Amino acid sequence: NAGVMQNPRHLVRRRGQEARLRCSPMKGHSHVYWYRQLPEEGLKFMVYLQKENIIDESGMPKERFSAEFPKEGPSILRIQQVVRGDSAAYFCASSPLLAGSTDTQYFGPGTRLTVL
Amino acid sequence: TQLLEQSPQFLSIQEGENLTVYCNSSSVFSSLQWYRQEPGEGPVLLVTVVTGGEVKKLKRLTFQFGDARKDSSLHITAAQPGDTGLYLCAGVGQGGNQFYFGTGTSLTVIP
Image 1 (cartoon, each protein chain N blue to C red):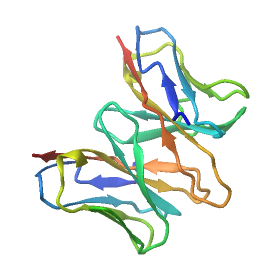
Image 2 (cartoon, helix red, strand yellow):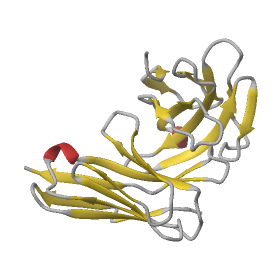
Image 3 (cartoon, rainbow over the protein chains, first blue to last red):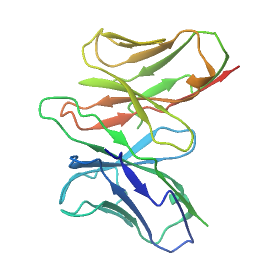
């Protein structure tokens, strides 16, 4: 059973370009979380999605950032017109969300975005 | 606003020493999780504590959840170089699917 897959692992973009980060959850998991991490810091929640639904996007910047989790295919975190401040590691986590229990997240290896 | 504060932020100790990492908040959580993250990798779940006052042991690691479910501690006995990494606590919201990560503690164990 493959773990959470993220690609690319490293992404370099110039200011003003678009960045697309992909996350394939573990098999059987229908919930995806996206986090952002700066060096030596904790993870900042961005967005929580179920298939075809955004459940909580309270951590997502209002402009330039969007996320989706279609019925088929991976979850996508999209950053338009990137700026240097977007440089960070972006982690995706998936969970099965068993009713009545604390959710357990399984993290992917992350995508390291560098904006030149 | 950072819901969960961890201390210390950085810790460098000799192999064989003991250490404690703290995770504090003014908010109440339904449960609290501890993760360890190695450079270039995603966090890996170590433990989930659910009940106020709960203590869980994982080999040389002891995790405690505060009675009021606002804080937690991680104690490592006889630290080894393999314990080196970033330790993160995460408070779980009442719905079970909202996670608030702490600021992180970067641990280095020197051989």
